[in-house]
Image (tube, rainbow, N blue to C red; front, side):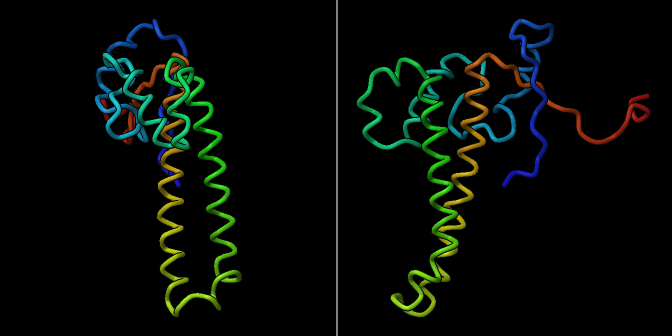
Length: 154
């Protein structure tokens, strides 16, 4: 669940000021995956592949086409994580009905906490995948100015 406003995107990779904006976004835009260099950094596309593969079933690692084409891998990862989010939501709705009588007291509540934490992790992964996909497609992330007004700058 992300309440922060998404960064403004400028579609033209060669647009004026794009390199400066990329340099300012040291760790990438808000929601950018931890451990992955920001878009535009040397080797960031190669570094994003293991992160995406970690979000997919282990068997995906055996397909060379996914390692060679991060855009395809991001597309598959997006679908896979979306399915996981849907499964997590379904489990959260059904856990009391399906397991309350079969588990010791307090276990269902602990399981609900587990499902909630996993749901948050998956939603963060969805945000990261969307940002990675956008960057792979050449979108440039430009930081937004926060707070204040034009008169504050005078």
